Image 1 (tube, rainbow, N blue to C red):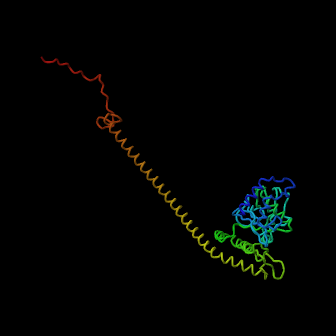
Image 2: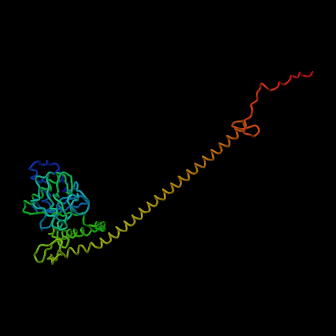
Image 3: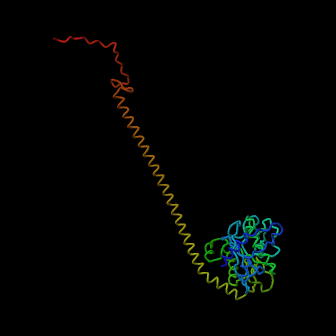
Length: 365
């Protein structure tokens, strides 16, 4: 039902003319979007959360519903992003970031060069602690990216309006969770050998907190990792690079997260075993194909050499036979340099002028 409503919403928005100029930040939400929000028990003014999955090129908007939990409102196909799976490291690497970000009203850009945009807030506290650099990392329109997440103008107009209305409802920020892929045990198994695996496991912990609570978690950083729904027992700020101090956590939430992760461990272990078995089989198949190709090439080369030798032998045989036949007929008909006595001197020609006449003998009667 949500998927159908989302398609209708996108169609209506696509049919509505976009406002240009300075008024584009006031692009209204379509009646269809408002109806869909109402049907799920939410409203334009309710809190929102955003999730981005690089591998699927999908941006999701989640909205708060009665009871304080969040439900998926709509998915948008990302027009383009730059780079590959993995976090952004430095300015100019053309890599789109991954992690947890907080967007405030001040990060909204109503006069963007890319129709409309908002800054993700990269680098955040965690990024800065590891020396990651970059600036103006946006979600924007114009479908062109150099480290940003680019949408179509129609899409970004609707997303921007959803954020604007959420701020108007009294919400001071919305959380953006950026993942390399959907955080399933099967997907993690595929990338279990990646140098980013430990980082992605850390991001999955935040994902798990969201899944068990139905809400975006609070996040901070210490000990070189994100920590979720936790704070220093001392009340002091956390240092992202220093070891985590004693933390205050919600025991019920932690219990749910641990239970979820434990339940997925067996699935993950099996997926890793299957993935590595498949990789090994693929490696064997590749090696066999390569060996077969080499053998076929060697056979083809041997056949070519044998054929060349055979042709040469035939040519020599034909040439020898031709020489023999030519010599025979030359000797038979006096050709060449043959002599009448076997010497090398040429035979003297017969001169008809010096042959004596044969006398005429009359017939006897």
